[in-house]
Image (cartoon, rainbow, N blue to C red; front, side, top):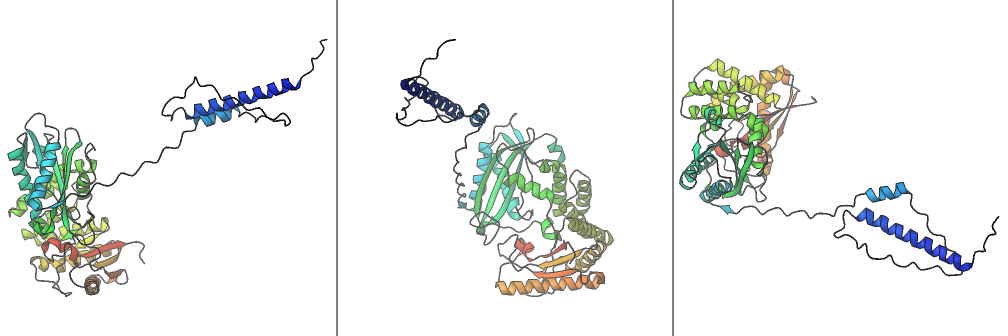
Length: 457
């Protein structure tokens, strides 16, 4: 049996010093492992660890316990918190220009920035531009389309502009969509409108991608926003998925994005509707009726423009009973969409209907609205709206009286609606157009809105 050698004080001090050095080096290595993936440069592995300071001779020091392997593994795997990224500043809005300059700016930007078509010349079709809120086409949007056609012919011979038609869509052309919308100083459709925002987008149907986009602003006084005959004659407005998809394709897309699937699904119907609108505006009402009816059977053909167009064509053809049935379909569509804005025209400052060309149909409209809402056992909120002209107090009062008048007429036709409707005056607080022109261009601001409400209280 060997005899144990006595342990000296120097030996203890050396052992403690060595333990401390081992722990310090281990902690240093673990820290390096945890930070290695975020370090800008690798640590200098040739640098020696700093010498540990020995404890005072008169005080015993116990080294800290080493972390367990599991703890070290978790610490090494924990990702470093990402550095906060500054929010990019929103780009300034484009300058307000004359109508002609704004159209030229947007058109040249889109055709200049788009990739060259292959083969050349490439076909481009224009899906008629619309107001970004109502979906209406106007003299302004028609003028824009004509100007773009001339600009392409003069400055971009690598393109050939063709009409939107089912046959041309078979060629997978490039397609232009655009919105022209009255906006305030913050580019929003609220408050006092100060300019028109013009959004123009080119999509390539062969790739399904957005290939170019431009935005411009036009002076509000330069713009003739009078609706085209089709939209001036339209009796009813409601939110429509096809129009929402069109607007989103322009306003909510950027270059490189896929074209909205909802828009692509409705392109064939849109082509038929475009041809039907052209026939209607040239007085070919039988042809328009046939095209609208065909569009109704196409994919995504169940939309407001089709229902409106069938009713208007039948009315122009003098088919009274069929027109009443078509208006009933319009009402059902609005009830299904939970909103039915009816373009009743009132005399200024009055609850009496005007002598407008369509006013002879108002009694029929009211009967159909009353019968269909009663059959649906719907409760209704009936809201009157006015343009911003005049005092807010007067507009609130006038809009309420008009709503109450429509409410009383509906209850006369269908007594079962009594106690199931409420009238409200919105004044000009929910203007859709907001220009305050008080003409055909902002007719929707003077609408009567009928909404089914749930629960029925």
